[in-house]
Image 1 (cartoon, rainbow, N blue to C red):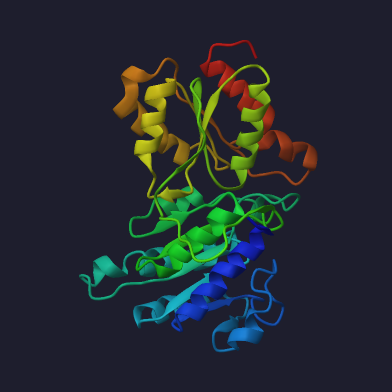
Image 2: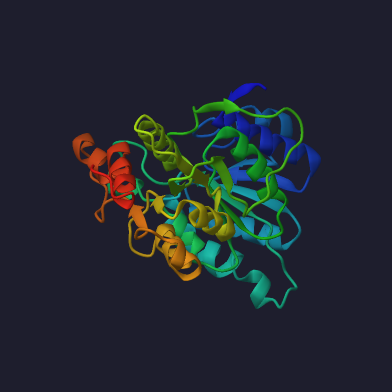
Length: 327
């Protein structure tokens, strides 16, 4: 199986879907002439032309609204935000138009649109460019929220998102675009809402998603040296959430640690903890533990960024705590 970068997997998904369906188009800042801010759309302007790969002004509310209108009229837009931090300017169109259109129109209008781009921290970008928005958008009925952790999932999930008749929030990371991984040849799709058990285990269930899944994986590998056999689950989407896979795993391991980059209040991990205590309470041998970012705006200084985000040491400590092992 070939190995390609995360950005190349996204490009393949976009290109294949645009070749397959002339209703699909890409729109956003620098997606055309500059080949994309992160080179996801490299070469696509040359193949599809300026009517289907469209550069926009720095006006997220405007081009998000154009995308919603296009979707309501039968097209399938892919709207790229240079970062989801900038999507706050457009959140009225995402929440009040795209997410609610099917309901408010009594089923007369669907809104098959994908909003995609990077989320969360990406180094020394300070507070206004470092927020994780997965739980924000997952809070809204009418949206689907996808957060892939590797190139193969990125391609299969983006193709599914583009074909979906509901609006999809597709969240990436600036720090993942250069990640390499094995990606199958040929046509394949990954269904939205199905988690992936990346490693089976018996001692503790570790759940994560997106960029921070790599950190959770590193922590699990570190504990393998001490004989801890963790089950590692990649959610892949956070709306819908595959609760059944998590609960079935907890019934086997009797312990749960959830790792995500968002702040702790009203987070994905808080929701999962609720569902597990409701449906698997008698199977728990320890309280559910979460590893989130510190409840502060992310600092600029690298010496402060590291302890503020979920890291291997914090995850290892959390796993040992639920196993009642010495840290």
